[in-house]
Length: 397
Image 1: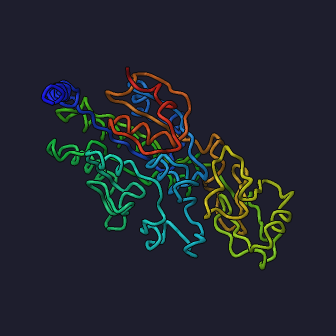
Image 2 (image 1 turned 30 degrees about the vertical axis):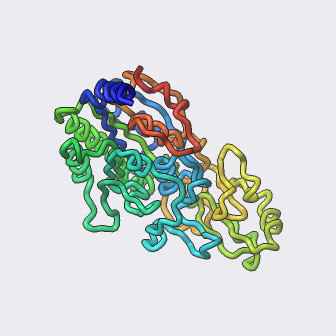
Image 3 (image 1 turned 90 degrees about the vertical axis):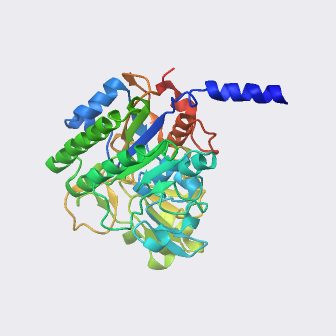
């Protein structure tokens, strides 16, 4: 018995982690950051990240909404599989409307399936830190990250304070220091919605975020172990321009007694009365600027329609169109469209010791981020819909 124990001890002592070469990873999500904002606007730091690390375009999951995709990034599961199938949806078993803006349902852990990366890490002895990532302040599987911020607590940390919080976590003593830190920023989503992706206001926001991420990276580099920190900057979805003259009404073709409710406009989820599924589907045939599917007939590439919370009929508008009866809004932006549209896809940047330098990686789906993070942390991942193979090309040898 002594010899195997001796060999195991030697292996541990000679491992990179034991030698003091532990790597840390910070992943930042900038909500609504389209892949081509770096081409449309002046982004010297993101250009620097591309030159010194990896650049890519990442495809979100359907629907291309905030809560579904942030939780997909955390779990590696499509929304259809982790349960947050939209920003708001009707839960059949609970007979309750889930909404990200309703504190009761938002904070109800029973809505959240899968295993977030912070739980996977902590089960294997790896500490994590979190600043407002979707799901991180909810007791999913009865657990929280090692360190986290509660989004409902006000005043909420401003953006400069969030950068400072990330650096504060990295400055903890090594025994207390999180090896993974996840941070969320609400912009440029707000500016894209309010002013459209192509606006002076959005341009200014992108410029400020670029400078903010530069500040974060330079702060990391001042740490004694700064060279051992990876930085990933990405997003949940893109943004497309919408206007009042591109609206489609479905209610004009439907009888009120046919459905229980219609939730959302990107997509529109129609929860039908049992005997009227076919009536609704047939009534919406031939409607311009939308695609209409029965729940079980949604195209396979969208990975959607098996979850009980998905509507019986799903109506997905063409890019730039909305399913709504309202036309009293100004030109702005929206998301939730088919994620294969260019406008819905997002920026991916990564630099640090575990990434290649000056490498442009092929496009990949966001369900692979969980696998990537698990690899960087040297932990065994839970089963997911993603794969490390799709992103292995960006890793340094």
